[in-house]
Amino acid sequence: MEITVTIPEVLASNAKLIGVPPDVYVTRLLNQFAVASAGKGALARELRADWDDFKATDLHLDEDEVDNWLAQLEVGQFVEPPALHTER
Image (cartoon, rainbow, N blue to C red; front, top):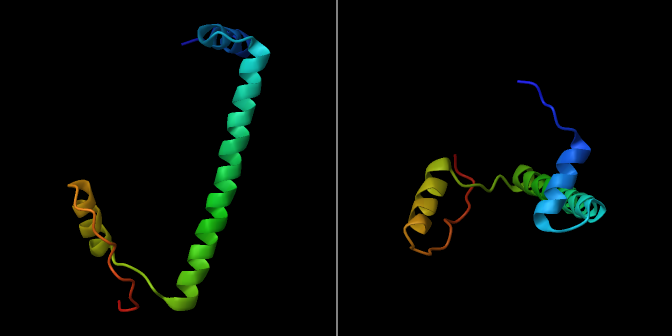
């Protein structure tokens, strides 16, 4: 399959679909990308902090405990998560 449209054509077509000029559309795309990228950085920092906490304390939940808790939430039983523990 050969692609016969250019990126500027796609951007112009999408901009027309939502009723804005192409430059406004591209600006919105760049803003969304910046927000998403910033969020990934925040997520990475949060995951790193969680990992550091785990290494320092060994507090965790087992896979079965998490599965059971999520199963309860899925059927509308809004229960607290199980208590963290250090036992393996």
